[in-house]
Image (cartoon, rainbow, N blue to C red; front, side, top):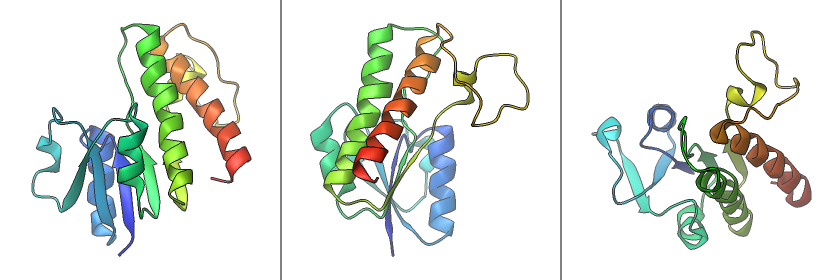
Length: 157
């Protein structure tokens, strides 16, 4: 059985991804904080790792032996300090990627956001230009994706 880790497993996307991966026969692991609400994961066969994407050491432990890592965790809010968004959404994402490389993870799947293409647009394509919106969530997810692409080119992840 192949091991997968999901960061942000206790949220809407992460919990539904966990259900799907379990149905497909994967051994599902989740990175959670001690304060995480696990109500969406009730009765699911998941192995939990306490940690935080801003703590590289906790990611090193959680990614050992992983076939795939699904990085869903992020600070998603309309309000807050830019520096906090940057620390979690950019630096945290790079921590996940570095832990994957250190532990020879086969593939990292990064969950981004359509919000980095701006608001009020229809028929957005991945190849469309990403814009700075002035909203910390949108802008730091854009930066994280750009840095992750650079990282993947350098490392082969």
